[in-house]
Length: 208
Image 1 (cartoon, one colour):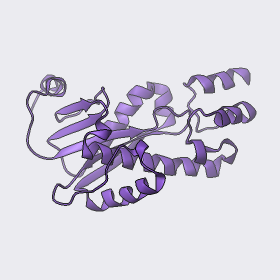
Image 2 (image 1 turned 180 degrees about the horizontal axis):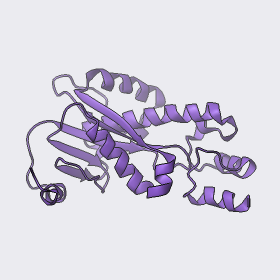
Image 3 (image 1 turned 90 degrees about the vertical axis):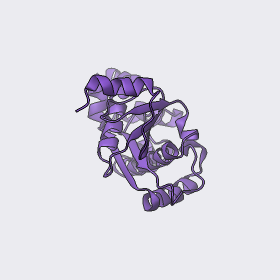
């Protein structure tokens, strides 16, 4: 069995590139004040490509939804995972994001030979991995993961809106927009808000 030290060297060095299946990983929801952070891992099928992949933030909601369905139909394997609000508050948002990414990779039904992660930080994995800054605009599998994560999280925010309509989660998706901050000051924090985030902490302190 390979040692964890060897795996970490592969993750950081990357001079050696293994052959085999490649998984792309990305997340959605690091910046919002509420809701879970969601990560996705995707292994695309080179023989059945998905056309039009791009960074999910550059796509219209309708285009993301269409690509979401196409990715799910054509990918060799995929997994969407999350870290809860409670885990975000306990671990911090970076560690919770890495946890969600690790869960997504470990949930794949096929084991990848290599994992490509958007950004500059890596979760601890049992396969070689590489962090790629702006990977969601450069690597098809990461673009696909960004779409799966974004569409899934947007759906969760619509569910939050149905439970807590006073905050407008269906519009701002939990991000600290002026409307969201006004609703926080007016109604206080709900169970879906991240207590460790500054604007939410301020509301909780003011309510004492």
